[in-house]
Length: 256
Image 1: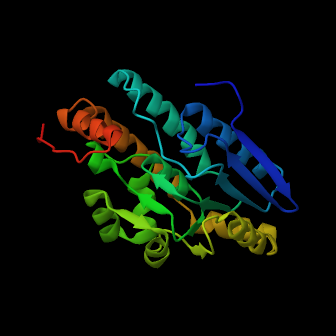
Image 2 (image 1 turned 90 degrees about the horizontal axis):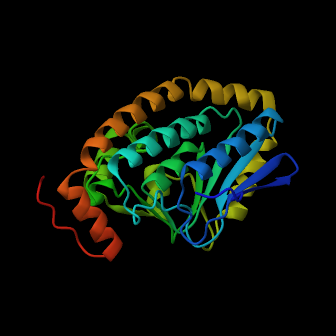
């Protein structure tokens, strides 16, 4: 964890671009999620009309970095704090558009799904990879993924840990617009500017109506997710899955 700021805000009239700076993978930790929430809350209080959530580098966000290992109890405690901070993202009153390039993996997919909309590129990939790592999904994907793609498709993506390209993501509702080329940021900003041109008080009231109950659902989902993760992080399958991901090999799970 570092005290160095890794989140910047670029104001563009009624739209602000909030950018993560941990290239190339943009792994998150508690400090990064807290900085994101701080930045978005500050913009929200300033009555910013729309924000774009972006990241520097090749990938949008590869989630949490499990390469360093760590004690299970420490991981569970850190995740509880992280989910508490993540809940703040769902309370933002202004619309948020995520610009998703490269990979949105695991918790990074959860972060992308915390936004109201996702603009992506054909070369991007959305990956709920938890079953390939050997532990339960997190970052409120239990709540957000079914809302976006439906329960059946969400279940398929979670059970199989299948990667979804940008074009398919738009087709199934996981993303909203497909940008030209590999950089979705200009298209995401243009989308946010479209929203910002509408009556701002009306848009905020519409968002409040459309997302009614979501924060409570997210809070319950993350509590359940954390409970299951705490159990499964200590399993042999989890050790196998994380090691295989680190070594870029195919895991051979043993069911214990």
